[in-house]
Length: 343
Image (cartoon, rainbow, N blue to C red; front, side, top):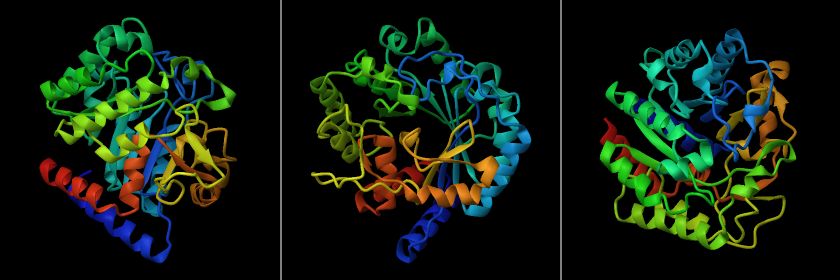
C-alpha cells in the first residue's frame, strides 16, 4: 500500500475505531468464476462453476460505489482474473478512483497480459513449493508456467509477492519458498486451507496432519523472527500453530475458550464473490446469508455484512488485518517500516 493510501487508511481506521464507525477499507473482489487451473483444495471450486461473468459496466459501477463508501484497497481475484478481457480497464478504473489495486493470480497468463498490468500496485502469485509439491496441489505442469509468470512480472518492474497454501503435500516447502523470495527479492505469504463452499469437503483430503501443520506454521514464524522476507507478522503464524484443531477452521457463535484474535470482517473488510454475493469474509461463503450487490446495491449489501457470527479463524492473511484493525502496536510498527521501505 502506497504512502498516501496507507495514511488515508489509518486515518479512517482510527476515526472509526473511536467513533464506532464502519468502512470497507479492504475489499476482495472476485471478478470471474472461470479458471485455467483445477486446484483440488480451491475454496470456491471455481473451475466447476458456470455462472456468467459480471459485465464491465457492473464492475465499473461497483468500483464507483466502493469509492463512495471509503474503500482504500481492492484486490481482484477469481477464478483467474486475467481471463477477463477488460482486466486492464478495471485496474485503471480502480486507480483513477484513488484506490490501491492488487491482484491474486496463478500467474500463468502474466506474460501475455503484461500491458494490462502496468498500473497495478501488487500482484500476488500462487505457488506451493518446488515442482513436485506445487504440481501435487495445483496440477501437473503448472510449476514451470507459474515461474515464467513470476519472472515476466519482475522483469516488467511489477511488484510481486507469492502466496503458498500449506497442505499435506508441501509442509516441507517453507524454506524453499523463502529462499525463492530471497533470490528474487520479493516477499512470501503462507496460508492454510479455507472452508469450501456448497458443503464440499475436497479440501479435507489436502489437510496436513496436525503435527505437520503445526511444524510448518512454527517454521514460518521462526523464519520471520530471523528476518526472512515473509509478508505477515510472526504473531499470526504462532496463532495458527497454536490453534486447537486445524479441521475447525473458524469459530462461529460461541466465544472461544482460548485467547483469540478478534475478527473485524464486516466492519473494515468485505469480500464480493463472482456471483455478486457480498460477504464479511471469504470464510463465510455459504455460511452467511449474503446479499447480491446487483440486486440491493453495494451500500445495503455492505450494511448487511455487519450481522455475522464469526468470532475468529486461524488464517494469517485475515489475522494480520485483524491485528492492524485492533491497533496492535507491534504489527502496526511492522506496517510502518514496510511502507517506508517501499517508498
